[in-house]
Image 1 (cartoon, rainbow, N blue to C red):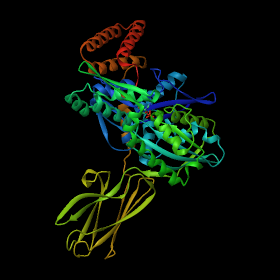
Image 2: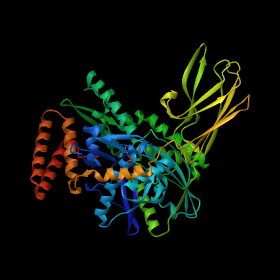
Image 3: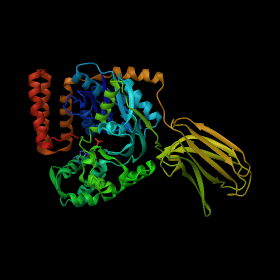
Image 4: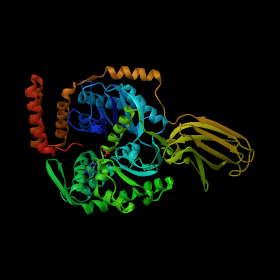
Length: 567
Ligand code: AMP
């Protein structure tokens, strides 16, 4: 059976194509979304999903989240006494989804279509394939997320030359893509976005309003809340979601046993986030420009990503495009559904092809320079040659001059990153070139950077007066695992101890109770402590019926003080 998987930064989903339509598969808690979170508990056992997200709140050193952001890099994170790469953590999430699908379908799941952002480069794509392999899945295909959204909305059933704009606003990232369908092929004609903008920024704005305006807060409270957003983000998130449904909402927080509240209107929220809304416009304009399309030429605008539930986002899109966007599919589920459509096509041997014309370089590439300002020389300036998010392949040239009299050599220090300080950015390589000895500023060099879709950076430098040249090739700005590393990772993942699947809900409730205990004070704390002890006793007795009843009691008790919302 081939499944479709949306391996997301915050949440992941798995779906299958059955009875002529995509169907989402629930996890052991009955949810379609499984948080992309992994933790190792104090007994060394693995926790994945919602329980791991709860654990991240009480014990961040044992939990990892948002690792999709460092796919294809060498970065590792230590959980307990083991270090994990992003591929391995992603593999653990994929394994959990695979197990859910096998339990649901009653048959082994061995093949998958996995979605990736359109801007993922080759190394990030290979890392995603490796994650699948580590999870015991043959990755039939990697599908671009916007293409998956297009398939969920039936782009493949439209006439040739149909174009869709996919607007994807998730928790932490924003992507806009223009798709075109022609003769069984979907083409990503342009993609643009902002990897540092998402629904979380909108919740943050509510938190800031609360700190500013809530009358019940002392100066010390405000300082504490400003320093530690973990104290209020859930309450802000809840208020944000309430404001998607209603005109007013109350953000409420327990602080040292006191309740502080602020009543918010949708208008307050919209005023406080006007700048964020504005930032959503530029990538839309860029994607349309790159695809050489006007808003009216598009056949459909599709909304995906949970944060498109905010009415102001939908209104902005409606105004901008002068039409209602498509949003009949749950915006959290469209990508997984599209992956399942592709899996279904594949199973019938009728797979849809896909080409990506516009791949983008996700980081700025440049060199370190010095500047002469009056008498003073300021070193360690980063001078970008290829700016972040430039479509690739790309070739750009910059000209630089010497800074000392009779300077004989220019040493190029090639870096990748976004800091104005050169040394803060990742060092990629060095290239020296000799120049004729002339007064400072008279000898010039031309530096050309050429970057291709395989992550190869070619650096050519020419001394303008003398005509000498030098060049170097820098392979892959990201790294991938070797065969030996993959084999070793497989062993390490197999050796991890796991809780039995049927215990997952118990684990989640215990982690949630611990998180609430940390949150609360006084009587509520005592109550949580008592519920937790009672539940642990029930678990120890190992009577399945009693465990079911105890679980129900604990769930209701926790819901009574926590609203029962899961995020
Ligand atoms: P995704 O990464 O697509 O799952 O999107 C998650 C983002 O959607 C988070 O920032 C959520 O806060 C946001 N979100 C989910 N539901 C709502 C809602 N009803 N109103 C506003 N934002 C929401």
